[in-house]
Each structure stands twice: as structure tokens, then as C-alpha cells.
Amino acid sequence: MNAKSYPVEFEVQGHAAMFTRPDTGSAPVSYPVPTFSALKGMFESVARIKSAYIRPIRVEICSPFIYHRYFNNCGGPLKKKGTRNFQLAATILTDVCYKVYGVVEEIYKAPFNNNHLHALQEIFLRRLKQGSFRYTPCLGWKEFVPSYFGPLRDSTNVDKSINLVVPSMLYSMFDKPENGRLHPIYKQDVKIVEGILNYD
Image (tube, rainbow, N blue to C red; front, top):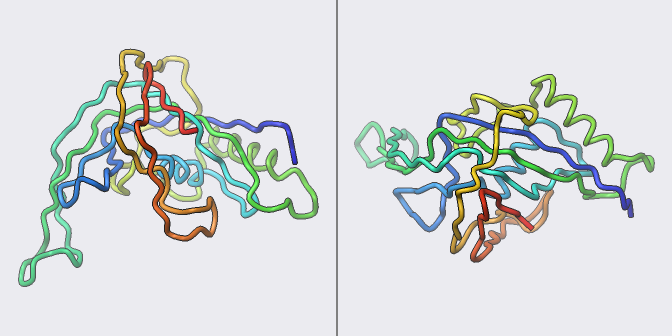
């Protein structure tokens, strides 16, 4: 087992975000911070390989929580029969900014015995600096694209006035980081201390 750590990080900012609390039903409300799965998806929007993945370990909240009512016209299967669309009311976050930290971990043994953890770290950092993505990252819902997604900025600081406890938070939808079965995992009494949430 490789004892060396391969950390990566990025900063994301956007005008709107939605990290849905499953317990809020048909009028969804956002968690104040991204879920573990949402951040894993953001890491994978930059770089991904089959034998390793980037595990989110910490997020720093760099802007105060601002909630906003949002309406979305959905033309999908939830619409009322005989109508053109279904209007979904939601409570989203606005003007968000997060600094996100992760570490590269192994899923399978490295092919050809190479250092795939270091390889994924280097690929991620290079592509992040270039602004190159596998697919467009989003802040929860696909329509909420970031206004900034890149290396950490010195001008952005954690908001240390933020202290709260999320009673129950969705951690992951699957039982494994890759090719997992649907198995929602929740964490209880998740603490945000001085603007920082640790996912471990």
C-alpha cells in the first residue's frame, strides 16, 4: 500500500447552487454546503481514471449563506396530465464560494504497477490550471454552472463566523466509489465549525 498522500484542491464560485436535501420532498431545499457526492462529481469533471479516484475530505465556506426562492418549469414526466409543464418550486443558495480539498485514493491495483495515484494528481492539477474539463462542472443542478472553477485564490478566505450543525446529511448515493450499488448513506449531526466541514 502506498503510504504517500496525493492531495488536490480547487475553488468554485457561482451565482446559484442546489445541493438537494432528500427530506424536503416536492419543494426541495438546498443543504448549505455540497454533499460528498456532489464534490466527487466536481473532481471527476476535471480528471478521472478507472483505477483511482479523488475523495473529498474538506470544504471551506467562503461566503455567507443566502437562500433564494427559485422556480423551474419542468416538461418531464412529473407534469400534470393535459398541461404543458410542471412548475417546481425550490429554495436554492445564491452567490456561493467554496474551497474544496481532496486526496487521491486507489480503487483497483495500478495497471502495469505504475503510480496511478500520482498520475491522477498531476492530470488533475494540470487540467485545472488549463481550465480543461471532461464535462461542464455544476453546483448541484446542471443549470447552475460556476462563474469560477480553478486553483485556490489568495483573495478568498473562509468565513469563520459560520458555525452550525446539519442534523442529517446525505453523504453518498452508492456503497462504493466506483461501480457501486444504490445505497444512500447519511451522516448524522454534521458539524460546520468556523466555516469548515470535514467529510471524514
